[in-house]
Image (cartoon, rainbow, N blue to C red; front, side):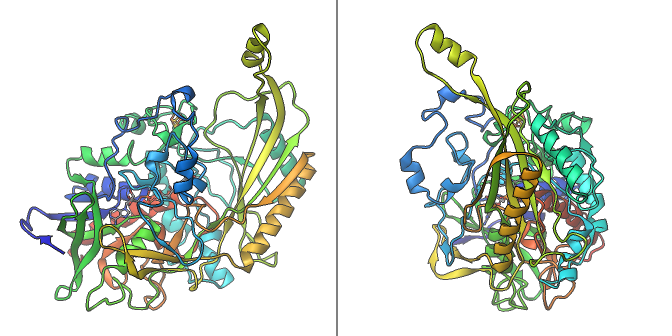
Amino acid sequence: MNINVDGKGQNTYDAIVIGSGISGGWAAKEFGEKGLKTLVLERGRDVKHNVDYPTTNLKPWEFEHKGQLPLSVTKENPIVSKCYAFREDAQHFFVKDNDHPYIQDKPFDWIRGYQVGGKSLLWARQTQRWSTYDFEGPDRDGFAVPWPIGYDDLAPWYSYVEKFAGISGNKDGLSELPDGEFLPPMEMTKVEHYFKGKVAEKYKDRHVIIGRCAHITEPQPIHTQQGRVKCQHRDLCQRGCPFGGYFSSNASTIPWALKTGNVTLRPHSVVHSIIYDEQKGRATGVRVIDSETKEATEFFATIIFVNAAALNTNLILLNSTSSRFPQGLGNDNGLLGKFVAFHNYRARVSAEYEGFENFTKYGNRPNSCYIPRFRNVHKQETDFLRGYAAGFGGSRGVVRNSEGIGEDLKENILNPKLGKWYVGSHMMGETIPKESNYVALDTDKKDAWGIPQLKISIDYDDNDEKMVKDYLEQMTEMYTQAGFTNIKTSDSHQAPGLDIHEMGGVRMGKDPKTSLLNKWNQLHACKNVFVTDGACMTSTSTQNPSLTYMAFTARAVDYAVKQMNAKEL
Ligand SMILES: Cc1cc2nc3c(=O)[nH]c(=O)nc-3n(C[C@H](O)[C@H](O)[C@H](O)COP(=O)(O)OP(=O)(O)OC[C@H]3O[C@@H](n4cnc5c(N)ncnc54)[C@H](O)[C@@H]3O)c2cc1C
Ligand code: SF4
């Protein structure tokens, strides 16, 4: 590499954060507020809140393809096209297949967002806390390694991030899904209320609740200070929200961090690797390649946070080799990149409900209902380990009718007939991290910036198959009990990845022989490098993971700064 090492002083910071998505945005905010001179390195372009949301206010008829994507685009992008949100209104926030290739040793749909804000612009904003039972999972059921922390360690940090991000939800009082610092919940539809009641009547341990989501339903002073206001239920969130109604790094943590005056955001900065200094026995900085000019630069800092999203964080650490760490930074035990897991989203059950004909729904609620895990929560009760949560929603559509001419046509369009109530559910299964599910650097192929491509080798196992079967049976039973009709089950057999909840590879644990990170998300073998995105996850549980990454990040920054001030870093 042709490295520009001029002006080392100019390029030196207290902290470097790699990635500006959900977790990186939190690291930037926390460091900035604590007064550390911080550099945020982001490989993608800048996306400024409100300024760079080109489709946010477009009407359906103002899109060239009425919101759909032309066949040529889907043919060129067979992987990302599988994601439900890759449509004409948000396609510019997704990585296109050919721009950033990777090796699928086994089929894996890797969905990415490379820009300031990362995937925080695109996420579905579902935010549930983990419970004690989730952290205890590996120890109780004998897989992976025990978590080095429990729910009580993270609970105050959940509260901390929830208050700032703005999480709407109902206090349901369930031990398997702890309540948080909620803004008022969204409403359930008529048929959702009905199903909730039926499930409560028939099952003691199953609950249908309104989704907990990162939307501002009643702005608090901390939200208005961010310039964010009440969610308007437009349900066009993936375009970027002009109201800041949902939490994204772009609307929330990044501008907040920049306002402290301590944080520098550097887009177009592809982190190649972390620099390890053998004499000092610590990481001293990072090597960066400008995504446009390909010029290489080095930046230096006392603390380095790796928040490039789970698999890219693995890639950066694997690519950070030195004579001390020939297999990648911190990788003394050879486990870096291994024990990667994900969520099993293969199965769905839909149905109809004959009734409630005098009721309808109002507005576009950007949220759904949630059924927390009920299998194997307190003890092992099935022939598979762990369990699944489920998304659930019930709505009523209109029967579109553009037939007729003149007055008839107008009447059909302006006053369409209401259709039946329909319900749908999708499975969110925990998968068991295994050594054989791994990522590694490809030995031949490099990307456009000379960085080895990632090889992904991840698959389902027998446990996942049994779980799919059980989910389909149990949901069918619950729908039947509720009197739903026309019940249809499906297993998409989709490859891992489309859940967009990939986790692990740099797992936390108590023992440096079997894990990479300690209980503070600090590399056991290189204490000034922290990983707080999905790569740190020892197991996956069933909850949507991003709230947990936020809590881990705020907690780890607090610890890192205290350590730095005590001259321990
Ligand atoms: C359609 C969709 C729906 C989702 N729904 C939910 C949901 O409901 N709930 C939930 O919890 N999660 C959801 N997710 C997942 C959620 O978006 C991720 O868990 C979350 O964004 C991860 O945060 P992160 O900081 O690890 O990564 P990201 O937000 O992806 O940010 C990583 C950043 O790092 C940058 N980067 C990568 N490599 C480098 C490098 N070498 N150098 C510099 N920068 C780099 C990237 O460009 C990116 O900006 C969803 C995702 C999608 C796409
Ligand atoms: S639903 Fe709420 S958060 Fe989403 S785009 Fe509309 S106002 Fe914004």
